[in-house]
Image (cartoon, rainbow over all chains, first blue to last red; front, side):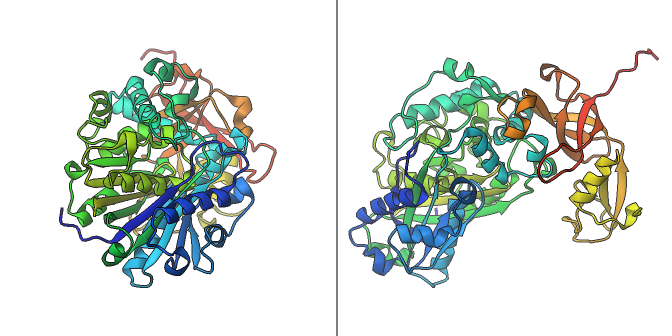
Length: 391
Length: 141
């Protein structure tokens, strides 16, 4: 790999993910920031961090609060640093990371924070479904009664019909990710499940069942980033971001070129691989956006880990287990670790940062040098893909 | 009454036509793309020269799902089927499939549009549509 580093991650923090009663976005973000500060003794946050970029999807609805940039910068103790909030549905904090990278590459700042947060579990499930639906097309999707599970179910059914993908193969994604989530002390669900349990769970949006869906979670994650040449001031073991891709597509599935693949993810992957000088075979560990099990199978295909239509057989053959060709979601993924939507992109980077430093505990991938994150907004109108290299 | 040709190419106009029992789309006069929903700017060639076209309302189910956990507004209808229908003219449209049990819906099934009045409630009070299986003609040719 010959990619020139765009930025360096020198520290990372993450709250627990799950049902965190009585804690709202600002307190969760404080917890993530505190871990990031404590993990980097050479950093003087108040002096060094000059910009704050946060992802948050729907805090106006969930918490009756807007204007999140300064709120979260304040609760991280970083006032008067300029702070902005970015929103690309469930890819919001990967978008925040990219803006942070741009601010470093422009030369404007030396050290910045990027992160994200969402507080969700205090609202009724029907309300949450409505708020998440804001990331789908209103006039032709939610107005017709579609839900987020419904959108991915439309893709799942098309994938099953076109390629012969089975409900069992989708359930295998859930079983795999719960097995790794059980090893992650910050995961929402820290227990294994059986294939039978996944397959017999109640229908949510056929062909997707309860165990095909990620949970509704609370949580926050953040990163401290600097220019590559300054990383050595803060740590001997940075993770360099060596490729970054982002593409957009029509928000409504009905206007996409096809229903069995996310074009935005394919384009973002091509951009990130090109920038990094990397190929799919170079990736040692990946965190992908498994908001639904079918999304993980499609991610394998869009990222080039297998051919089109081969995602189901890849999980069935163990290709994405911790000792497989490309270990995927050994943190537990969104499925088991949890999916506080605005925090997810930063939480994926948190996992890769620790994997590349050899600090991932029970789910450490042996000798991980190159990592990838794949963060999707909505049903695929946004995709952000980053590639990382051990420092 | 406003002539169809002078109506703005908006989603509001689209749903007003649904209320009149018509499925319409915009056609870009420069690149010939069919735009469903209609838009004031062609996303392919950036032309703003459009005309309204009326579609036949028949097509085939390209994919579908059966919703069991619904938002508040649709909870009284579960389980219900939502499909993406590929219309005979080529454009796709998303809508519920009614008049057939969910377990009998299949990819490739031929369906046609039916029109419904708006429901009471908050914005938007647009008229609605759904799809139903095309009645099979009893005569054998």
